[in-house]
Structures are given as structure tokens and as C-alpha cells.
Image 1: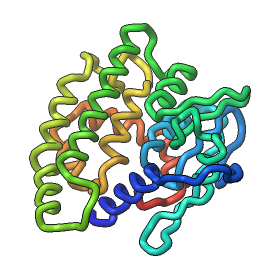
Image 2: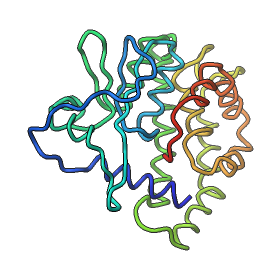
Image 3: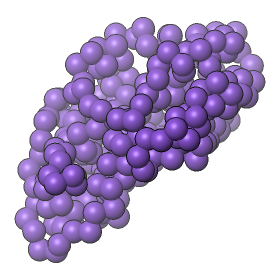
Image 4: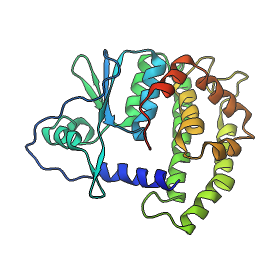
Amino acid sequence: RAQFAMATALLAAICALALPSGAAAGSAHLRLRGGLYKLTYFDARGAAELARIVLVASGAAWEDVRFPISMEGGKPNVPEFQKAKASGALALNMGRAPLLELDDGRALGQSRAIERFVARSHGLFGGSEFEGAQIDAILEHTRDVRDAYGRAVPAFGAETEDKAAKRAQWYAEALPDWLRRLEAALPPGGNNVAVGSSLSLADLAIWHLLRDYFADAEKTMQAASGCERLNAIADMVGAMPAISGWVAKRPQTAF
């Protein structure tokens, strides 16, 4: 748990690095698949993992480009990211990652914009405008849960008894309440998808929240134990060969 908190703080520190100007562009790293899209981010799950999951579920060809992270003197060292930012390669995301590039030269920043664009482009955003709005609402609900965790358990600073107590309270009290409310907010339906009658970005976001986001998987499962439909959706997504295959082969990172 302490490692997770430190890793989260490390990623925030990386994104806030002040960079020199005039450096040359860095080379692409760790290309798993080639084709229509190129998604560039750090060698971490972080803010880009749901976008990766959407790309996997879409069946589209894509490249997973990662900036290596190392530690030097207790500080993060990300030279390829620094070079890419200084060169202007990340300007469309305000000098940050992730960045999605298309094979026609267009590019898009902001993780949530990337998730929605890929989902809409590959039939994962509902069958109507209203279903798309319902999916949007669920995405914002899941973001509210993640943001609440960030407020409840600070990512920065050393592990202390107070932080451990706040984390325990989150899993025992706050997270179960959030998940009960998320379950109640799902549109009516009798199948194992959140919106409409087919897989959508909402289902992927629910899987990501319940099965992939929090450090303590066992306590997250306990917190979700009364949420029948959320668990059914998460189980359905997790059983997809594309998703389980990605989880098995993706680089193992601390965060």
C-alpha cells in the first residue's frame, strides 16, 4: 500500500517536471502492436490504462508506446519524455501524456477524450444519443469514485498511521457506499451490460474501477460484495479473451 502511494506521487512528480527547451525528440519505446493508433504514455498504468483497455476491446491495431521511468537520487528520471515534451511532440496535450496519434497524422490529448473517441469510433458508445449520454454519466460516476479516493487517502508524503487509518476507512466505509450508489445509478436492464444491449465503454470503466484500479483487490471485492450488477459486468469484461490476454501480457508496473 505504501508502495502504491509512493508510486502515485512519483507519477504526479513526473508530469510536473520542468523541462529545458531545445532538446531533440525521443524515440518510441516498447511497441507491442503496430497500426492505426499510437498511444504514448509512461511505463505505468496511471491515467492511460483505461484508454489501453478500450483499444484492446475495440480490436483496433495500435502501438503501445511507453516512456521509461527510472529513479536517480530519489527523483524520477524520464529522459525520453523530457525530450518529447521539449520538442513539442506532446503540445496537443499541453506537454503531457497520454497522447493518441492516428496514422493520418492527427493527434488527440486528454485521457478521457481519448477513451471516448476510440469508443465512439468502434461501436462502444451505445446505439443512440441517449445511450451515449448514459455512458457518459457512468464514466463521470466512476471518476467521482476515483477522485474521492484521492481526497480521502493523500498520495503524497510518507506512510503514517493516520494515512493507514484513512485507507482502512475508505475500504470499509466510503468505497462500499460509493459502489452501492453507483449500482443504483445504472440504467434499468436485465443483462450483464450497463447500457443498452451490448458492450460499451461504461462496462470497461466499471471493470477498471472494480478489478484494476485500487491497490487492495481483496478489500475492493469486499466493498463491492453487495453490488450484484456491478460484479456481473466486471466479471463479463474480465472474462473477455482480449481483456484477460492484455492483463496477462501487459508490462507489470507498480502503478
